[in-house]
Structure formats: structure tokens, C-alpha cells
Image (cartoon, rainbow, N blue to C red; front, side, top):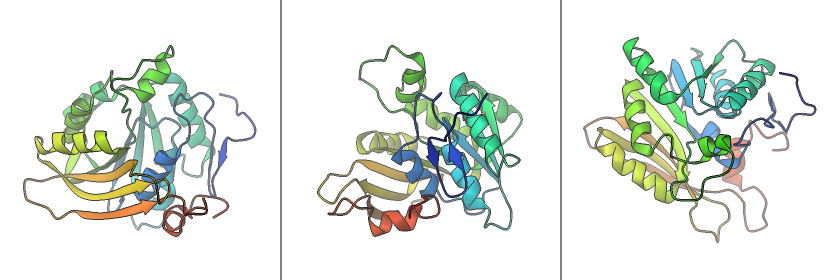
Length: 249
């Protein structure tokens, strides 16, 4: 694939091109890439990587760790896969991040047979359920749950998580609450959440949350994050979370 110039988004340590992707770089992806707890993860999987943004953010963050994790980035759409592969190849972490062109629902069965587990799963999944489908099949894959519903996503994630593994996601509040409820039937529980507002006067619009496999009751760590302050400038907490990535922070 030829490189368009210039890049669509230039971060401090890598750049992203997204012309071929139905789902462009957005704040949801940046939030999840900065928020997900990488801890002592040795194997990380980004489900529905799109541009490769979240996988590359995790790769950048992991450089401070003693043990650098292997990162797999999975994408079903061919055009997005090629874009993600290009973005990874242009980054400093091409040897750390492997991009796969596969359907997650079939790929996870193969990994289960091979007994491949992941310590961290991350996903900014499609969440439109009842809205009209687009004329573009690529956009429908990226935005709608028709191909893979939340229950299928959770079951597949459950198959791939290590015993101490975590599944980190970002979703609108309504869909996040549904996923958290569905997770209980798989003995996956909420351990951490951040309620996100765009501005102080707006209602909560997104939930960043972490699920872990356990049957024991857990205390949930909760906090709030507002992206922009009363003056429509990035808030102090958003800057603290994302300053390692934005060029002008």
C-alpha cells in the first residue's frame, strides 16, 4: 500500500493514516488506548483494531515495562487491515505488533484449540443495534452489531482470557450496562470504570470499563472524567491521561 501524505493524525511517537478505514481515528479509541491497564500483560489482543490506533498506543505505553508484551491486532475488514498493517509498519513497534486479517468469532476458536490465552483484551466494538444499515458493508461491520453481538463478543473473549486476564472496553452507557450484565452470566465481573463526559454540563456519554474472570465479589474502582472544561479546552484530567500522545499537550 502506498503512503498518502501527510498522515491524518500525527501523535508524538507515531502517525495514523485512516483513509481506507470505515471507522476513523476518534476520541473513544484514544481514551481506551490511554486508559487500559497493561500491568504485567505478556500477550495483548486488540479486537477490531481498525486503524491500529489502540494497539500502537499500547505498544508505546509498554516501552516502560520490564517485559515488553506481544500485541496482536485483529481486523475483519480487508481495507482496514491493510491500513492498520501500513500504520504498524511505519511505527517504531513493527516487530512488537502483529496484525491479523480474520473474523474474531472464527479466529478465537483456532486460538482456543492452540491453547493461546491473552492477559489483556481491548475493544472499541461496534454498538449500533437498531439504527438503519449503511449502503457500505465496511461501515456496517465497523459500526453495527449485526455481525457480532455483545454476547458473542463476551463469549469469545471469555475463551481467550487467561485466568488473571482483563477485558477493557469503551461503549455508550446504555450498551456498557448491557455488556456488564451479560458478563455476569460468564462469571466476568466489573473491576474498574470511568464515566466520561464531553463537557461539565453534558450527561455521561461513554463508559470505560474493565471486566475480569472471577466468581468472587469484587470492589469496583470508579471515577469520572470530563474531556473539555467550561472554556472548551481540554481538561486537566484528560491532559493527564493523554499527554503522552497528543503533540500539543
